[in-house]
Amino acid sequence: MEVQIFGIKKNADTRTALRFFAERRVKTHFVDLAERTASLGELKRFAQRFGVSALIDRESKRYQELGLAHSNYTDERWLEKLSEEPLLLKMPLARAANRLTIGLAETEWRSWLTM
Image (cartoon, rainbow, N blue to C red; front, side, top):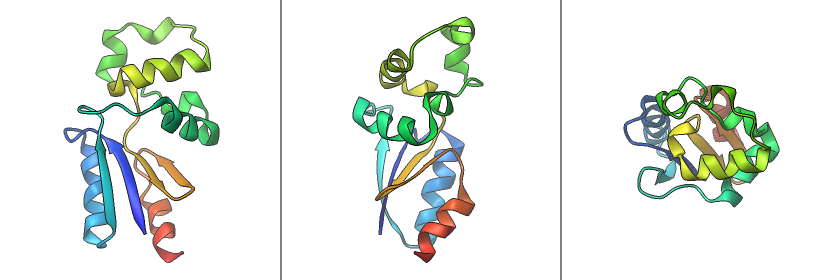
């Protein structure tokens, strides 16, 4: 089993996810969004499962800085914006085969390990 984790090293939840899998000796592929943004295709995969609004971290500092509280973007425009501005994403985004999670989801991750 290999888990792909999208996030930023400075994000506490991302570090928690990386530590969770490392402690269980699960191979991880970390994509640092500060260095390389997530592709639209990758974001669409998460959006199809959870909806675009689940990807947006409305509590983030970057969301407030950009004044997006009253924005009325389409889902497609939000995905473009999230691709351009990874600090707007809820982190971490985790993927193992067809299983996906957004944010801390240790219960879900544990179920991945039993499969």
